[in-house]
Image (cartoon, one colour):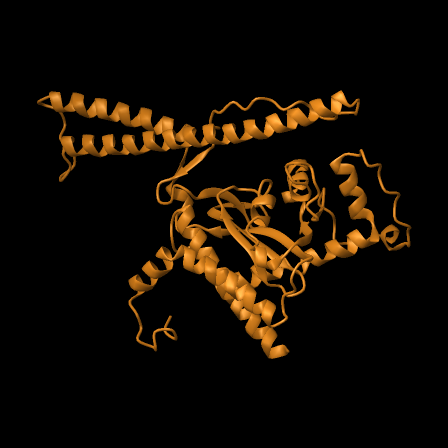
Length: 372
């Protein structure tokens, strides 16, 4: 900003307002940077391979400012009991006075205000549960229709039938008073929890440029594959292959990525690990083997994906994932120093994440231009 404004040092509030209020502009800038990369021949057009992954970025809120659905109910009951005690105390003329500076009416008001905030938190958690259940219901109906279609064709159907979602919140569902749209998420290697957002990126494997980005409030990546692919702009062209870890895998996600709603192929092939594997290669892994036989056309998504990941071409393709997207997140956090959002709310942090991805892409282009 100092460079753009001729070193006049604009006020930080002015910068923040500009950054926050120009969502469309920064989105357009993201696309223009990719267009410039194509003109410089650093990013090819069409038939690209992308690695998709998510990273937890700390929210501008403390996890200690959060309350669970069950704990909120317990605190409401406690506050109601204390208000009743204070009212009783106010009616007793000879009751023991409070500490100096404390007054019964003020203490009652404080507890009532706190109770109202806790009630609001429970209402919000209940609304989220209903919204989640409604979305799940739509997916379950699609799965049920596919099961019935396969059964009608005489094909084997595995697994249990989808159960109707309850639409009720879990006791541990959280609400944060500082940034209500952020969530408690597993961080690091899953050994601790943080108040965070789930920042997603689709990285082109040859240029290491980010070609798609978004922010989610979902604590895991199970439903993030298709929405993240949809953020890749049209000028990039067709995506030939997508590389994801097992956290992104679901049968529905793979089908949506590889087929249109009418069942026509999209031209995209998903490579996803179905289970976590060790980086260590055994002696058996070193032995030369022929590719396994291709599964039948009517085979399940899992069977086709398992075969794909066991072929030499599939293994070679999937190796690109580890050296593609994870180093990008490392650069953004360690080199650019972006470890926490400054803004609050999903809409605002989404704009902030776009700014960060633009900054990364410009830095990457500068390095590529210097090496050319």
